[in-house]
Length: 399
Image 1: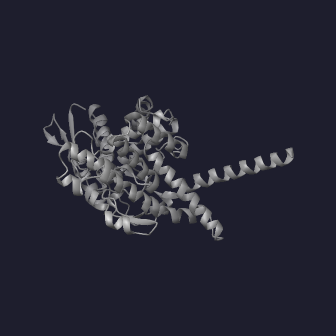
Image 2: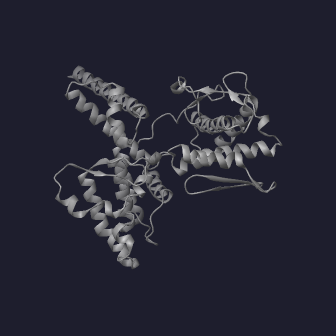
Image 3: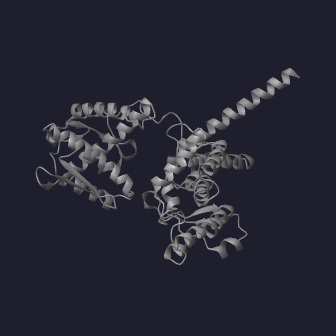
């Protein structure tokens, strides 16, 4: 990519610059700005989408092609090339279905970009569409009734790999994995600030189900000592500053978890600031909860992920599992609790009804986003019940 420079700005905009032509690549730069203005997406998501487009742009230009050259055949060749590259990536989990899913995400970004270019008159009007166009694509199932089909609303194409999917199961840590990871965090660093910080971070992911960015965004002023210690409620409201799609949802979090975080703030965290000479700084009163042990600055998402992932790997986690798997544990346990409660009350326990109740706990606006978690957990519960029944039958026959 030496010919092109792509600079990402904090909100997700990408400034694309062609060094040879000494000019901005407006087709990419303007699209990134439109994504920020038109969609409630976080900077990372927008940056990832535009990154896929930028890579395709380089592929296009390095072969001396222009947008007019893009076609179904051209995109298929690009996808085959990208599939080989994804398979060979050292971070690949070795799953063909997962690799194809990754390439499908790249194609989706490109198709939506082409649709935007066409809708804004930046390419010819037969570039992309259901019939008679160079690239064949149509609105997704959920938006086919819309009069105006816009980028980001859903897109369908025969170019997508149909046998794509995840690695085969929803990333979910077990309770045993959680306990093992806690033990590894202690073993890796001993009884000090770092160990306590990392264990509390893991606790929040497992007990509240927050994403790593939301956990890193928590601040001291959200944990008022008097309010937390005086309450008799089982849960308390907590609103992370950083949420996916820039949501501003408030969650009900276990009061015991709030107390653990407060104890960490008043104990190990306060001791660290004293050692660093920062006990009277703004960091002490309203700074982030999770701080670097060397600088006192807020920990980044990646830094925390790296620490937790290392402990999980030492505890026996498979490749690809990270802190998000403990959010999966929260989802599984929340689903099981809701199912048990609904069974006791004689209520419907279908995937749809359970997902509708669990979705807000996970920060999902659309209950359909929760369906795969719920269906997978119901399958696990079903297999567990069947195994217990078979064991009981076997014991009865022996007796």
